Amino acid sequence: MRKSLLAILAVSSLVFSSASFAADLED
Image (cartoon, rainbow, N blue to C red; front, side, top):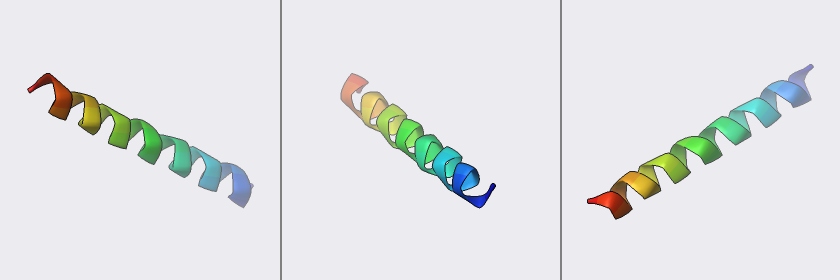
């Protein structure tokens, strides 16, 4: 249970950081 929560958190942060990076590139 805990491990899946950690995995979800890790994926979410990866998606968020890549989205922020893409937004920076678009500028």
